Structures are given as structure tokens and as C-alpha cells.
Image (cartoon, rainbow over all chains, first blue to last red; front, side, top):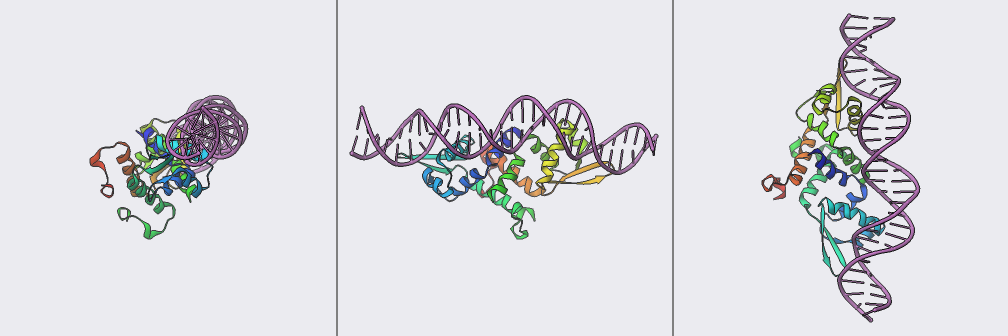
Length: 100
Length: 100
DNA sequence: AGTTCATATTCTAACATTCGAATATTAAAA
DNA sequence: TTTTAATATTCGAATGTTAGAATATGAACT
């Protein structure tokens, strides 16, 4: 079980992948747009997307020759990132209710 | 910021470290006990503890020649692991309230 | 069919992480 | 003060991850 969990965290353990996730937080985006927003070279972005797909963190729909990526569990991911935000950008008032 | 976040996830991205965290979930334990419970060789355990210390996930108190480790943010860690539990051991009724 | 646009894959060198083995530290007991 | 028990550190080989370069795929347009 820890193996499975650590595989999941491994996928989150890269700044570019977190940036990708963040850029999909509020909806669907095609690869080209993410590419521009993050200023990451296209093949590199594609590699990271493949890793995110493998762990089922993102999915995509095809729209002509474009691929529109989205978060598979947007709420869960949002909650997760909020949570570590409270740890790392440690402002006392940001503590989630469960931790007070 | 993504760098800082990914550094945090990197620390969680190892099965042994997750097992250590889990073994501290319900209180304080000294190194020897964790060692036995997890059946990990002592120097290796010590290396992982050092990594967990660096990211402030665990702390310790000294008790004679023993070191008693504990989670620095037990509630936060518990919430975090519960959350990914709901994703990975996917049972519909385990979905946290916020994600239904 | 050939071209173009959007994205994916493969290969590889650089770099990072991991574990075991050996050794070091350090507090207390003898 | 020597010994012992508990834990930590250092080193190195094996393994895993990363980014860039080059190349491939595949859908839509001509």
C-alpha cells in the first residue's frame, strides 16, 4: 500500500507537474495553451503529461487535432494543495478547521 | 513556490518514509521500536528520519540515549493521507464530504 | 497524396536518490 | 574511564529521474 501511495506522491514531486496541475485547476486547457502559460518546451510538457495520465491525475478529450486536458479529481487535488499550502506558507489563520 | 511544494512531496514519495509516518500517527516512538515494527535496517531508517526531519515532518525528544520521534503536524498529515486514501483505495463511500 | 499543425515518443547524457557497509557519536552503565 | 547501547553519518555502487534533441504520429486541410 505504501508503495502505491508513494507512487502517487512521486508524480506530485516535480515543480513542472505541480504547475501543470495548477493551470488545470479552474478548467480544461489544451496542450499548446499550457505550454505557453508555463513556458515549458512542448516535448518536455508532453512527457510530464504522460506521467500525470499514468497516475490518472489528468485526462483529456480530443477536439480536432487538439487535446484538452483536465483534472480527474479536481476537488481532491484542490483540497490536497490547499492542505500543503497551509503547511508550507505557514500563516496561522490558514490552518484548516480540522487542525485547530 | 512549486519548487517548495514538490520538495515536500518528494519527502512523502518513498514507501519506507510513509511507513515511518504511519507508525508515528498515534503517538511518539523511539527509533529502535520503529526499526522493529518496520523491519528496516537501522542505518537506513536513520537516513530516512534525517530526510523527514529536514522537511520538518517529524521532530524528536531525547530520553536518555533514546530518541523519541513524533509527527510535527499530526492532524495535517492524517488529513493528507486520508485524502489520498480516498483516491487510491477508491471506495465511493470514502469520498470526503467536500468532494461529493 | 502531400502538407501542416498539434502533440507524443524515443534516446541519451546529466543528475539525483537509494541502500548496504563501514564507521562515528554520544549518553549512561559498569 | 572503558564499555555498551542507541542512533547518526559517510561513502560508493546501483538504480531512477530529468531535460533536450531528434523523430514520430495523426488529424485536418489543400
